[in-house]
Amino acid sequence: MTMPNIDRVELEGAMRQSLKEHWRMFAIQGVLLAVLGMVALTVPVIASVTVAVFVGWLLFLAGVMRAFSLFGAAHAPGYWSSLLFSVLTAILGLVIALFPLPGAITLAMVLTAYFIVHGISSFALAFAIKSHTGRWVLVLAGGVIDLALAGLVIAGWPGSSVFILGVYVGINLLFTGFALVFAALGARSA
Image (cartoon, rainbow, N blue to C red):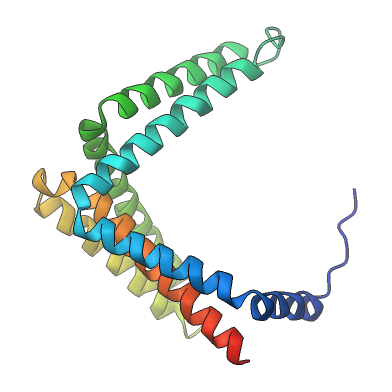
């Protein structure tokens, strides 16, 4: 299979044109995301529980779909471990979906561990690319922010675990919404 030859300039032009033609839809989407972000920041516990329920059902469906995909493949290598993993994924998802408050706490713990690992990895990457780019400081700053967020959650544990997912989601939706609105307004006037 060969990859199509895509001209970067042509692709950027098509994207710019599409953004300009549909700037209103991007702006509306941005406003809706920003409003959802503000709602999540206003009621972070409800947002955390909502995220836990959503993630729980996604895990459950992923486990069930994986298990169904294994039918007829009983002689394939790794069948039993794959079947076990799919059943465990479905059970974990169901537990998180049916018990969302403990699920939110568990997801907050996992997210905090992710921020620690990502922060340390960002430090390593920043120093690895230091001699190649002057923007290594931005990667380093991202690592500092990751570790600071993890530190804030750990310092406030277990109280912070109930609302931290909602805060993370709220901030993400808010900034994504603003980014879309500003991109749409910039495209409109371009």
